[in-house]
Length: 277
Image (cartoon, rainbow, N blue to C red; front, side, top):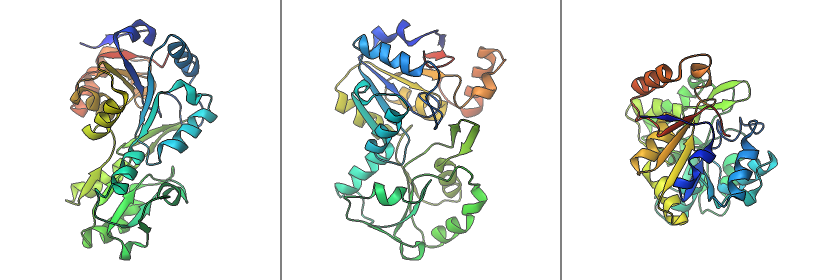
């Protein structure tokens, strides 16, 4: 049964490593959530190991720069791991056969910056061996990408999705994210290779790197953060004022959580908290 808590400090002593999602937990894409910076500073000063595990198509370094600009000092974290970082390393190690990619990105230049150091080519769709799905522009609609999916499907191209999130929180609400487009492709029997939560490899990579035993995942997505954590034996905390903020707003917590778990067919989180504090 999920336990409601008022602060992470209540339970932090039970864990060797506390791992945070980004969007919906630390920040809304534009600025840090109220109390989040003070919470992490307090945990770090108390000696707890803090890391970030994010479904971001970008590599770890630009994500570290982003959150540092919002006030989260890089010194707070033992490690920042992203799904884009994991994909970059698999390509660099020769684990992926394709070398010509058509990129779908949130902002122009994202893919070019991500690919630096790799022996790959970013090319037009008709010349590609695979699609690199890093992100979608904030104003994107899934229908906008149907012609691209049609052409990729006709050519039997795999999609490497380095951001499995269906939606992402922003300051003014939710936007459709890359995982939603990947799901559309998968539903028509297109090949999709996912990097990131809830898939086991990215959790295991961070676990091995940190060499800890007792992990706590703090996230706002039942499908990605909570389900992924349970699959690898981690405890978890659900942030209510993230992805499901509108559902939890002015409603009974237990009723909302029960409904979400049923609708999403997800396991319950170990703990639930309104926001990071």
